[in-house]
Image 1 (cartoon, one colour):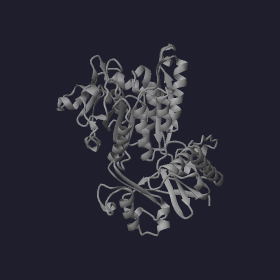
Image 2 (cartoon, rainbow, N blue to C red):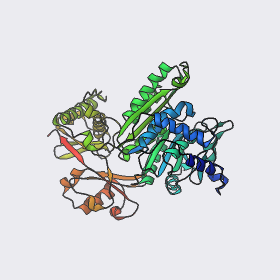
Image 3 (cartoon, rainbow, N blue to C red):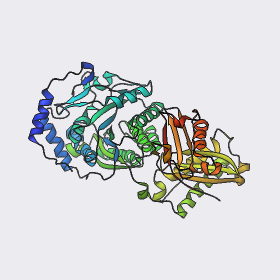
Amino acid sequence: MPSLKVNKLIIILMGLCWMASFSYADGNLKTARLAGSWYPGQPSELAQMINGFLAAAEAPAASRQIGVLISPHAGYVFSAPVAAYGFKAAMNQKVSTVIILAPSHHFSFTGASVWAEGAFETPLGRVTIDQELAARILAYDSRFTFRKDVFEGVSGRPENSVETQIPFIQQVFPSARIVPVILGYPPDGGSIRVLVEALVAAVGDREDVLVNVSVDQSHFHTDAEARQIDERGLRAVSAMDVEALWQGHEKGLMEVDGFHVVTAAILYAKQRGFNKARVLKYATSADVTGDQSRVVGYASAVVYKEEPSEVGALNIAQKARLITVARDTVEKFVRTGKVLEVQEADPRLQVPEGAFVTLHKGRALRGCIGNIWGQGPLVQTVRDMTVAAASEDPRFPAVTAAELSGIRIEVSVLSTPQLVRSVDEIELGKHGVIVSRGQHNRGVFLPQVATETGWSKERFLSELCSQKAGLPADCWKQSGIRLETFTADVFGEE
């Protein structure tokens, strides 16, 4: 772990960088608006403050790769002691680029604003933009643009969501570049989905990119009320449960300031194989001021990769439980139109995992729907995919009550998809394959498709491209195509 002591020579050099003249065009250089108010304006004082908070944070550097870091964005006296936990956990990680995902506090717009060129300036110097990565995000969809006013804020109220993260990035990852992205408000599910796809496509197989989510928690409740509200929101974050996060905000039970940004980050993390979240620190402004009458909540959390071996394979009883849930679900939904309420005590079945549910009638396929990455606990994913397989597969009419006795259920629990660089890595019968190009074309075959059809690898991939992704049959040979593999634990009623 690098020393947290302040090197006087480094501080002097930082001061020189702060005063030096650079040739960035005015539109490409974002000057500090919060220095001297939200955080110290002097380089030495700012560096000492950040290092002090890092030293005090009781969060050892993580041994697993962190893909998403959630940090608060208030004045440093209040939020920096909490933010330090996440940055300290990631400080030994190789990070070349930090994508800062943040909400807009002053403008309502659709899509996202991306600062794609130049640099951001703080008292610690200037941090440059990763122009190549930013350009890929911008080019992905017309809803992504550059609006300088979104980053600047309004008169007397500068935007703080991005700038508050940068001094920490400069201090912990001094050679990193940044890509600042402010997501529009009110929340737009379509824009969020496209942003997730854009981030995944732009990052590709890079392992040196960290997503820094800038959000606070609830605002202006009593300390006791804030802790109850924030506990609900952070529980959803810990479970990486996007559905619970959205429903909680729709019902007024949660108040994550920028929950739509957190949603985008969680969905991105799942697609990139970061499958475990942990809240490292929570506090309120009352912990600093002592005033419990009207507080703001702050949290630091990380999303990281937990290897499949750490999760553990399903045992016979757990597989039987999932089959029972699927059977009870299809019976109740087809007969009554109501979705089964599931209460699950087994922690293994509460792990977020992708799953497909396949319905057979005799030897014929009767429906098959799945979620590759999972949006919540495995047991709920199996329940939800059972409903979908029975009623939403566009190839078949909805299952009727008269058919239920002849329906047989098969469940496939999926591993986290992994990017492949060559089709030689694909093993038929072992690997399921996902093919995708851009935001609109994606298809998936489960591993058992190759076994059931007897196709060669070339036929398997060609049918995947044409049948499932709506692409030319030879798309898997072309550039710009993304191939991912996964394995499946397949079990059923027979």
